[in-house]
Amino acid sequence: MAAERERLRTDLLVSGPTDLALAFEDRNLIDVGEAIVEAASMRTESRGSHFRRDYPERDQDWLTNIFVARGNGHLDLRREWVAADCGWTDQPGDGRIKPWG
Image (cartoon, rainbow, N blue to C red; front, side, top):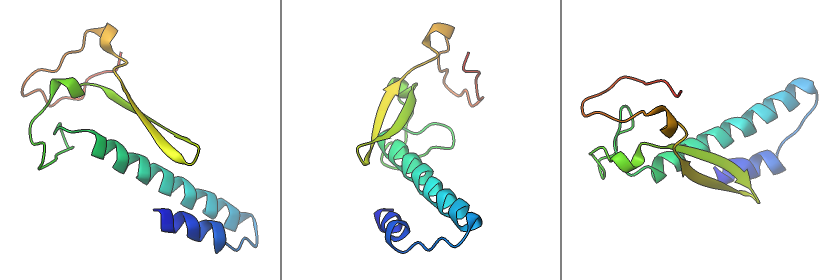
């Protein structure tokens, strides 16, 4: 992703508003892709469609949210469970998507 960011920074030719919009879209897609990959790498468990061979089991400690922000040129990831006050607890075999509150 760093190579693609560098390409956008150095090789971009904007000749009109459409080019500028496409460049912003490219940059945003790179940002989203990087956030997804980093958050998935951080999550050391398997749950729902997120499956990892190196961590095949569910881990109740990962019943949490991952928040991602970019600062100083790198991603900051943090875990926080935002629906704890709602009493949502994970049940074995429960594959439903539950409300956030």
